[in-house]
Image 1 (tube, rainbow over the protein chains, first blue to last red):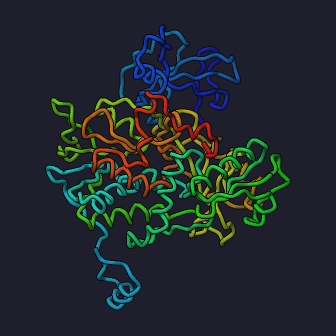
Image 2 (cartoon, each protein chain N blue to C red):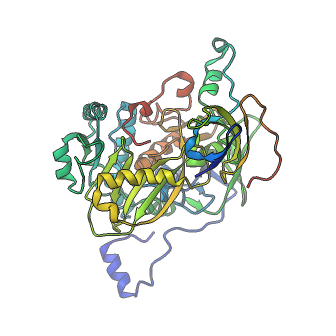
Length: 96
Length: 416
C-alpha cells in the first residue's frame, strides 16, 4: 500500500484516497469550438507515461480535497505532492 | 518441426528422449522483414502464426523485450468465455472460442483448452436482470449462455456457499463452452507453429524507437540489436502499448493499471468450474496442477510496476472465503501483478492507425487471454490486407473521435 502525503493533512495510507487520473487536463473554455478529434483528445487520450506522471488524488476519507502528485510509475515512488492550482513542479533527476 | 504424436513419443522414448529438438530457433534479426510484430505474447505470436498460415506472409519477425509469453500471457487467470453483451464483442470473442475449440489440433500442441463452464454469479436484483439480458443477447448472437437458479448453481458447483453470506447467491449465468486453457502452452504452441513456418522470434531485444520516412510511413524499428526495417509494423505490446505508440508520435486512449492474481498451494480436484462474481469481486478456478487460481481487481492508479497493493488481494480473498468456505484453510502460494492497458469503453482496439504501415492491437484490459487466437487472427488479416476483418472493423481507434463506443464497461458483465 502506498503512503501518500496530502498537502493539507500529511502522510496517510492509500486507502484514504481516491485516484483522480492524469492532472493538468483543463476543460476547454469553449467546447463547441473544438473539432471532434480535439474533443476526443480531451476526453480520452492520455499520456500514460512509463516514468514521472502528474496525477490527481482526492483525500476522500480525510479533508476531502483534490491535490496533485508527481509519481514515478515504474517504482510508484511519490516525487512530490502539491496543491491544486499550483504548477507541476519541475523536478529533475533519474527515475527510481 | 518435429510433429508431436503418441508414436513419436514412443519412438523418442526408445532413444532415451535424446532426439528432441528445440521447439523454436533463436535467430539473429535480418536487416529487413515484410512485417514486424512488437511483443511476443500470445496475441503477437498468434498474429505471426496466422500471417504465415492464412496470408502466406512468412518473412515476419516477432520482437520481444523479455522472453516470449513472459508478460500478461504468463500472468493471467487463463479464463476463456464469450458471453459479452454487445453484438460487436460477442462476435469477436465467439470467433476466439471457436478457434480455441480446434487450437490444439491446429497447432499440434496441447493448449489444454478445457470447456468446464464459466458461471457468473448474481447477488442482487440488478445482477439478475443484467445477466438475464446477457443470456438473451448471447442466444440471439448464437453464443451459449443460460440462466441457473441458486440451487442449480450449487448443483453445478457443489463447493459454493449460496445462502449463509452477506450477499446470498440468487442465481447465475452459465456458459458451458467457457473454461480455461494452459496459458504458457498457448504462447509456446503459437511460437513453435509460427517458427516452423519461417517466422523469426527475436527475444531479449527491446524496441527503442519507430523510424518513419518523410512521407510519415514507417520504415522499421530501432532496437537494442540495431535497426530492423519493415514496411508494416504491428504493435501488440499490452500494458506498454502507450509507450511503444508514443515512439511513432501517436497518443492513445489508454491507461495502464496493475492487475493482481494469486494461486494457492496445489490440492486434489476440488473445484469443477470457473466461478466469477462481479458484485463481491472474486473469480476462481482450479488449474490442472491443482492450484486455485484467483484473480483480484486492478489497483486504483496507473503503474508499470507489475505489483499492486495488498488490500486489493485481501478484498478478493475475503470474497473467496465467503463464497467457498472450505478454502479458508488454503494457503496462498504466490501472488503477482501484470500491467493491463485499459480503454475508456473497456473494449480493445485492433486497427490501423493514423501512421501509414503502423497497426495496433491493444486495450484488452483485464480480459485479453480469452481472445488470444481470435485477436491474432483478425489482427493478421488487418495487417496483411491493410483493412480490418469484418469482426474487428468496429474496434477502431477512431471510435473515440466518432462516438461509436463499444461500451462493455457500462454493460457491467465483467469483473473490472
